[in-house]
Length: 379
Image 1 (cartoon, helix red, strand yellow):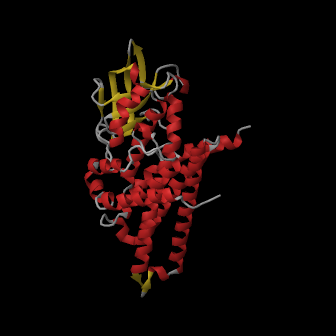
Image 2 (cartoon, one colour):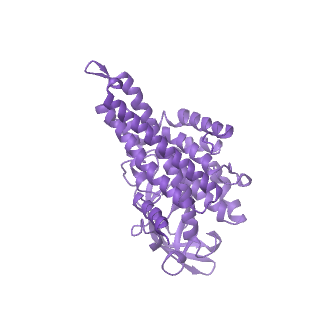
Image 3 (cartoon, helix red, strand yellow):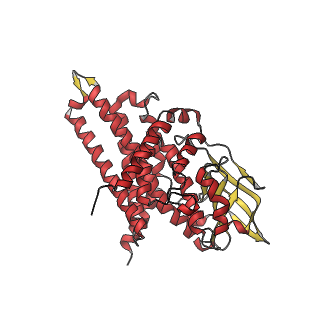
């Protein structure tokens, strides 16, 4: 059991940290304030391979492991969790095409996704099906060489901006076996978008409803066979949960570092905050929780890379623990800053807002507990 990163992983970590510090951190506050989708920065990241971290190299990806990806996403999110999370979503959608698509589909969509000339979104959640994803109602009816789609998706990151939408739709009976995966391109007739949601955080990525009204999509755009969509969706979410957990670790780490610096500088009652034992203990607990979260993420990533049978459960454990711990650490850092933590001149409040949604998306933390408890109680 070796907890040290390999030389290659240290190089990936240094590269991602350098990019985050130079291309994300100085601008993240402005992106948040102006709800700016940072296209230029994203495309600069794509040059370094961040658009297809675990897409096969022969299809333009970087072909790294899930463990490597967790290291990279921690670094990117230390500068801007919102933008790092969008990169994760783009990677997940691209990986689905790479892993489950055919040669023509890979050739058609992946080259531009790997450069982020085109952006991708993942469409699973609906107004009436969030945690109960298998009950989705967006219908795709076969009509010759096309499917005709009717329905809508909710809270889609990249909605109205992305060029490619990897969608889970119902082609068959109720339940998970009736779900298929279709790729819908932006300018398809019958595809439209709702208003841009005004959100607590994640403001550097647009979020809208994705609406299908007699939207005709070629059968050739179906990824995998009919009825395989739910399996594809769940496979993507294992990695997505790891990425969002790593993003929580990265954002929380930035807050911990800021809190430490503040405690060493700020004085009250004639001494530094760092000299109050009560505050020392709080910082120690924050660091301990953060380290435990990182270890859980890395272990789950290694299990997913190895294809172990219990990888899904460990991904759920890592997601539940790291996103809860990450938000708590960031919130504690805000408290340690006092009033300064609450104003936008400091990055703490932005990160707190960004990290809160990590406990909800990619499967709520309550659903993570369902996954874990089912595995524990299986006879």
